[in-house]
Length: 310
Ligand code: NDP
Image 1 (cartoon, helix red, strand yellow):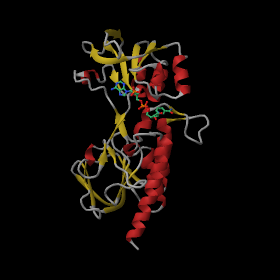
Image 2 (tube, protein in one colour; image 1 turned 90 degrees about the horizontal axis):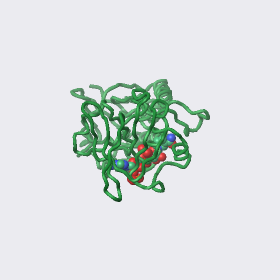
Image 3 (cartoon, helix red, strand yellow; image 1 turned 60 degrees about the vertical axis):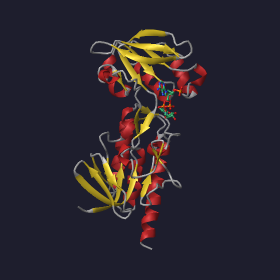
Image 4 (cartoon, helix red, strand yellow; image 1 turned 135 degrees about the horizontal axis):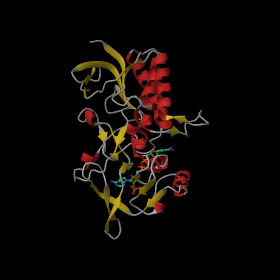
């Protein structure tokens, strides 16, 4: 087993940008892409707010370009998931992808975050892939001419509702609070409220999923009156935020409410381990921020490596 100089876990904007920077510094980083190479952006449609793309760019295309750029400078990418680490010796970091063991002088964690599901405790999992989804871009086309719902009041929910109107006959956007509490940006809200195919349902929680094999309806419980009603639909998309992907780090590195705890700008509780992107960011969750953070982690890692040789 050869010891890598730099291992990067994650292949979203943070991981791949860290890859570009460490590759250009001749560290030949090994990037573990995980099972969703490209990360969350591969599940989005158009990225409209990344500088340099005045006409927008499709999420998967954007990620492909960053990957190619990292590879061009010598980054090695593998579609494997790191599921165990041993950071007890900061001078010899150990990582496993299944039974395969790897070691590195530096690790940059950029594993991002995953969709949050409702977790109603009523067996909602049985509808996954049968009407219940967390990715409109991936599954939207299955709902051509159907009635669907999207849960959430943030930018993701609004974007997904708008996107789904390309296929669905009608889209309900279901939010648990009043209109004034919706977190989505003004332009996004305008787009949703002006779309004749979208009906916004306010102050309602989805409290149960119903159907034989496929989803047929949801139970709604009013946030104020607790009144229960039923809404017929064939598809339901959750867009209620994300959970950081840190399960494999438990006990090895300090976490804060599930996110990697950041020391300084990109440091962690282990001196040779750095962090970047949504896995340490409960607030901004933006591609541009993650990419910038990835560059910072790479520069901090280089400085740390240089200090070892002083
Ligand atoms: P947010 O955290 O912004 O919003 C989550 C939404 O889900 C809120 O409306 C929240 O309601 C609701 N929610 C949370 N938990 C539950 C639950 N258990 N049941 C019902 N509803 C729930 O997440 P987003 O994914 O929308 O956005 C994350 C970040 O990414 C934001 O910064 C956003 O601006 C950004 N983004 C930007 C885009 C763009 O610019 N094109 C596109 C998509 C995302 P409540 O408010 O009541 O807590």
